[in-house]
Length: 172
Image (cartoon, rainbow, N blue to C red; front, top):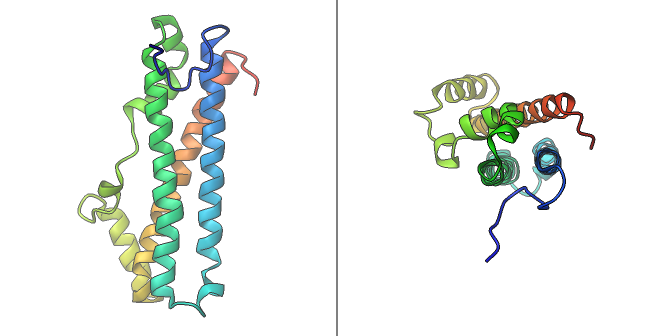
């Protein structure tokens, strides 16, 4: 029975390069999803005729940016972990910058992201911004801050991919 190796595409060739290319392409797809969520978040002014902003803002941003973006990061993490475990020790050392982000510093689960007690800093900023602008926007600002965290995580993954690619001369 064939074993699923996650990001490993082939048994032959440079498996480190295959993994880096796969992580890079998955990260690019995830970035597209995050930008689509940001675009919908910014287009809510046009959607105000359909529903009030306190309904539209959180729903659009949460569903597209937070949930789909976070699920994309978690999928990259699980597939990278499968591929990383299948490598020998010398190849694992080559992927150390990616391992630090994707295995050692995993993205929190969605339930942790929406827990106000675990994200007190995010909740404080969202509440302060909501009271300054409009209290009805507090959920939207909270999700916007979460959206920014997803972009930051995406940037960290991209930097690690570029570090590995430059060090081992992998082209995309």
